[in-house]
Image 1 (cartoon, rainbow, N blue to C red):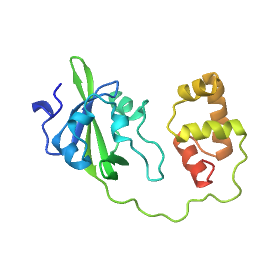
Image 2 (image 1 turned 180 degrees about the vertical axis):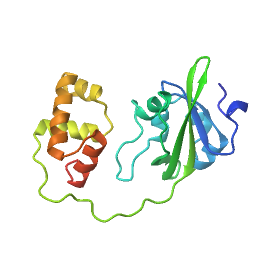
Image 3 (image 1 turned 60 degrees about the horizontal axis):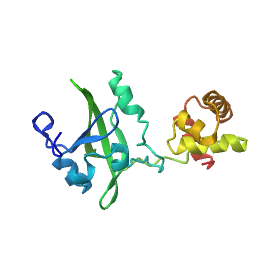
Image 4 (image 1 turned 45 degrees about the horizontal axis):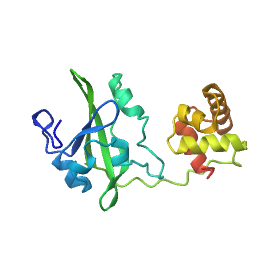
Length: 194
């Protein structure tokens, strides 16, 4: 595939196209203008490595086990996500919309990028009461989850079985009074545990 957009992906909007392995195939002129990163620098690299997306609190959004592409491929309709993308001049807050295109050689994913407004300031989100008591292992796992590591990577890195890591995560959920890994990381940040 060409480094710049070809007819099927022609658009004035900044966009890039990547495959199931998250390797960028197209990086159009709009993406070059928005990020300052050239197509020659982006094409052939992993999208998570080029964009290096972070949330408003600095947490990792873009990583090698992107659940967003998988969810869209499975037919889920996800709203655009706002994140801080890497650019030549530093971080820039952008909105990414994910579109899937089925091709003969498999799905291709398009991220259409737009400037995103500054995040709304909210009152203090520090939860009431004392912070939860976590074991050193739970803190270690929570830190890896906050870095965007999937359960399989956490298990491999800590030399634990995946069911053991999932068991620790269940205990973390109970202790933090949450129902998902995203909520757990947000609550841990609010308590300044990670």
